[in-house]
Length: 289
Image (cartoon, rainbow, N blue to C red; front, side, top):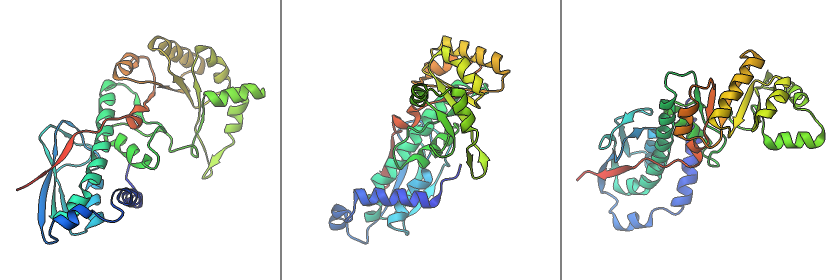
């Protein structure tokens, strides 16, 4: 996955407009304009790097003369104490950009690191670890990129490129007297850019399997199933669909839960916490005297 440069510039524009719409009044009045500085991006703890290019772009956004030498690429597994980049140039520009640059690289590295931990739990299995739509508004592109840096894969981009019937959709269908099979049949008619779209149906109970299978969706999502019920559901769906339907597990996924369902035969595990509640990795900008 490649980050769109225009999207990066848009995100940075909004970030600086929020943080310093009228400049950095402290640095501009305390630091002489001619002062040059140098600092290292140093890891305070281990992790998986993501967002190093945005880190660099944050400085050049303010001053194109600021140079950032990258010592590691996105996806790199680093240890505490490792130097990841060097920043040199106008002290004023570096100080104005420092927090924005760190915010992005710490957050994205946190996502990549968390993703890598989940990917490690299913190593050797044919299971994809995916993100969800539970992303921060306006930051979906960079968060999804960070998931890929950690070894995960992306789910649908949004509501416009794939069909996913969730619990509220199914409740609306029931109240309208419409069967799931009919709804899936209608969804099969959808074309995006002239191509059919994936059709996924979420269930939260074993008793829903038969009704959903009647419509033959591409994917069935098991929402908040216990490990034991996940095994039962996978066995039943595989038997009744002759292994023709992809099965996804989601809902309050922890490392322990992922570990417990890794041998169930599940195809995909989607994890909202990768983007909605991840903790940033501690990275700091240390000044070189």
